Length: 402
Ligand code: C2E
Ligand code: CA
Ligand code: CA
Image (tube, rainbow, N blue to C red):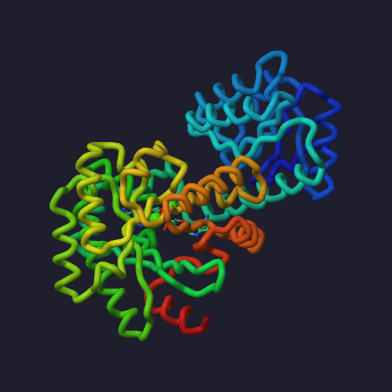
């Protein structure tokens, strides 16, 4: 069967074992998805794959093996979504996946041969839907394309700060047990006069690179406080969590500044959680521990964000006074299709329980994911299945309608 030429998300099966390839093709056909088979790795390397395509790749191939294929694709900036397949044991697949990710290649999942048709079909279906969704998102918002010539410049961002073009959205976090709203995460947006609403991924890395994060965070804190006051005035009794960057946890005077600001607006630090990523704690450990401990002593809660993605160190987790562990959405999203992700989540929850920390799963996008994480004993859920990030007024309405 040939692939539909104009499909934005093509599916390629690259496997020298023709029988196995035909079998996979037949399985994907049951969900009305067309695929193209390559039994020669050399031939496959001539294909112009895109970041929206899916490549089901056998690791053991005679001419060039799966690892070589990934290396060559990465070197010419071809970055499709891989599903790695192998007859070797799970550890080989796992390590191939790590290798791919170190080259910024996206490995959606791995499969050990032989695998069950049901598992394979569910995986292809979910991956295809996700790729299609990403494709449509990019069509509707070209600003999320990293290589987009249109991406903002640092001068534009500085101007945006002066002109107060940043705004904040709120995304609810609810209890898995009671579904009650506990806290909302503050997420920044840039209301660009020409480009519309820009997501943080298009400008936070830029601000970090140009050491503008302290200024940016000051602005976000002011916005968050003002909007939080509106939420309280709207009669809601909730807490908020705010993201901090690496540059924010290297300023030793930050805890006092933050405390002073909250005092000025009559807000109790006990209502505020500060989210910090693991990688933000890499530099100057003693300074960051100094800052984190003083924040805790002043009453702030501390959350370790994107847990499992950075340079996870158990020592750091043990040393720093975190009250909450936020399981990264990449694991949560894959938890229903990838046993490795599920295993990591299990360990995160176990670890958090041992250290008396609350667990939050972000990226809860579907009922299936909700059920999975709930059954694993996770405390709180955040994600599009519950609600997308919203501006203040919409957020207040949402809470009142619950
Ligand atoms: P994060 O801290 O991990 O924030 C959660 C991100 O997950 C948000 O993306 C949110 O919109 C998204 N998300 C929530 N539920 C789902 C879901 O069900 N599925 C999927 N696929 N995604 C979901 P957003 O708002 O684009 O923010 C991206 C990142 O930018 C944040 O990741 C955070 O690292 C950074 N960021 C956002 N606001 C701030 C801020 O005020 N200060 C700093 N320093 N960083 C911020
Ligand atoms: Ca966060
Ligand atoms: Ca996160």
